Amino acid sequence: MNPEFSSLGETFKTRRKERNLSLKEVENATSIRVQYLQAIEDGQIEKLISPIYAQGFVKQYASFLELDANKILIDYADVLKQPIHQEFAYGIGTLEMRGNPGGTAKWMPSALWIVAFALLGVVAFMFAKSLGLF
Image (cartoon, rainbow, N blue to C red; front, side):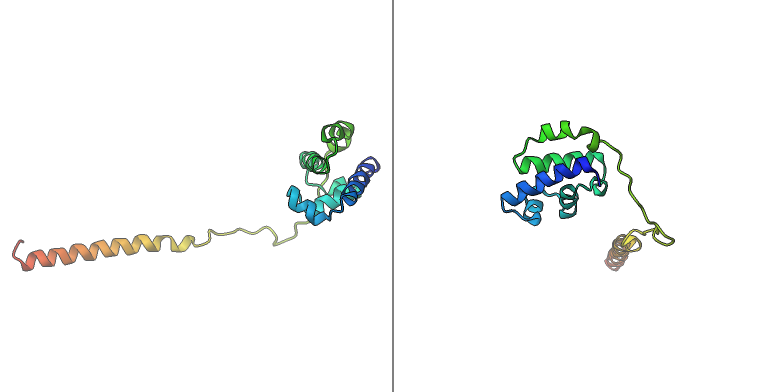
């Protein structure tokens, strides 16, 4: 938790509650997921995806709350541009090859058309032969 960012989060939370809005309502209005809104309000910048997303989320959330988004980005530039360390817990078997869904059945329509045209050709030849054209 970043103390500098915590004060900004408290400002956002206070402003949101003054407007009697839930995090879900803010999510619907801003398209920022609740978990990221909660991270901003709790001062947990490390839970955001990357510095670029952190800046974008903070700017959009500030604009939605009618706060001065540009001033906030300038005031908290050092905090918002710090690299965010992400924990990835890949275990054995979590990375697997994925096949192309339906990849084995894509040849089926082509094969059916080839068979249909071949049968049409045979039927046309037999018809022409029965008429004495060959």
